[in-house]
Length: 125
Image (cartoon, rainbow, N blue to C red; front, top):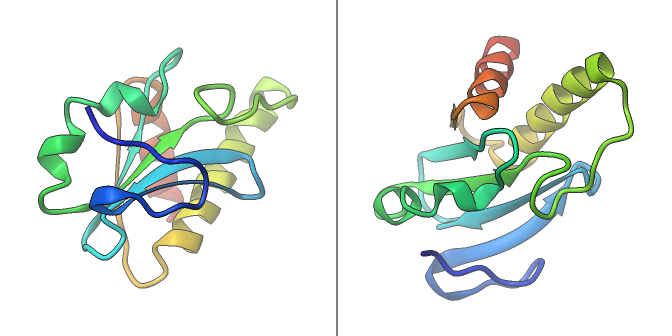
């Protein structure tokens, strides 16, 4: 398991939870001073907690941004149509990466739906 804190508070082990883009995507940042960064995107009907077994391994060497996709976990649901939702989410993920990873190009990793979005974001960058 991995610790989580309320929004915008630094916690033990460099854990912070935040919302961004504006308030469209909630994420947990782990090890904000480490590099390189890995952005983790979960599957449909999951949340950032889907990565609980992976985070303890990755946190040893990486900065992690563990995302709740819109309508999952702490991220609000989008009211956009299906096609508009996909493009808006890709745009929001791109903005999140720009806001949080200005000095580097992170690895974007996902499973299932998160994998589709990681490939789409990667192709757009």
